[in-house]
Image (cartoon, rainbow, N blue to C red):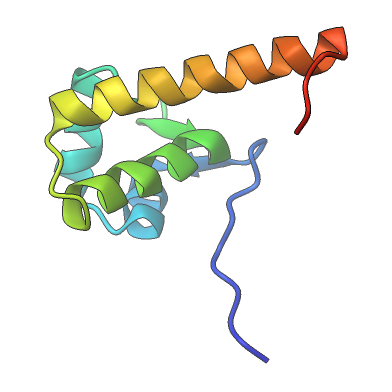
Amino acid sequence: MALQPFDPDPHTVYTIETAAHFSQMSRRMVLVCCKHGLISPTAGLREHGYCFTGNAVRTLRRIQDLRTVGGINLAGIKIILNLSNKVEELRSILMHNGSANP
């Protein structure tokens, strides 16, 4: 049986240390991603430090892959993430209208 990669629960909240560990980034790099608007900490939990949802951890993992495997800088990654989000939004609209073939 092959090991399955960790897929963070989108509703679970992770500390910055855990988010950095799961994304194989330093804490500093996670903060840089926040500064560049690539992810945002969970609102309301900042008194305990930065915390992130599973979706943010998933995004961090994607950012790390784009940086290390693709050699893409943060500006390029921001464009890629914005375009990917727009594609998903449009796909959702098409699926809702019933006019899309998945």
